[in-house]
Length: 337
View 1: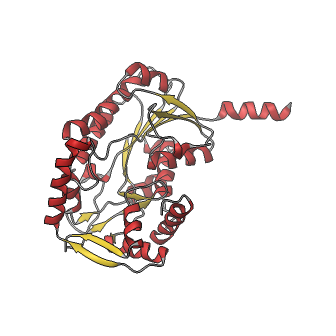
View 2: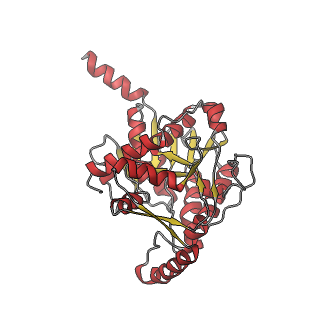
């Protein structure tokens, strides 16, 4: 009887949190981290969503229409923290980017008015801030200059949160994220397996990176820290890399040799232009598209984590090689490679 009472009290003490985009790459990793930290997690998903990344997890599901206020209000009922992770990274035109990334955010903010929600945490992106001017990483006080529709739509979503959120908010801007369930960096592993390592252009490309477990830990730290209220934070592991550094880490993890091939940017534009034409037939946007090439041609995708270190006491737990090793092992165990 005592154990039953303890379990009941434990359930009452658990913070109730809602995660949008819970079945995605970052979302599913965040859900696991939240469960490990003792949260009661509800996942907002569409009825058509693939839920394999959440299989056998002790979570609740809310099947919501992201564009229906009543549906979102029902999903947010009795929740304490909203983790807004859902976003569209690839869409077929600018209008669709803004519908997916801005309108949904507005609807969520409207749905939590007069609710039990105490905090709103949104995952933005480094693309909202745009590339740095040089080798010095961008900080949260730098002028934002997004170069793609995706970045512009996420920056607008940030503005909406800053101006319209009825509760304390936190904005997290990660750089390129890699780890279990990621399909974008998976392509580099697949190509290295074939002994090929393509690089866009001939100029050196500098970038910040973050392993997904470090990112979701930082998201939770920001949610739990009152000093993070109404603040924007860049994520990252604090290092400056060349894309070649990531490829070298993949080669080491896989124990493979790969020939580095520099592909002229104009060829990327040709492929992107072809894919832009094909999207009208496939109704889907390809990974290599004109907006992506605009981002790929930038030389300094660098951001500083000093603010997160100062306010959140954030420190990454994984080096690049350690994160890549874990990612490769996960890909193998789940037969993605």
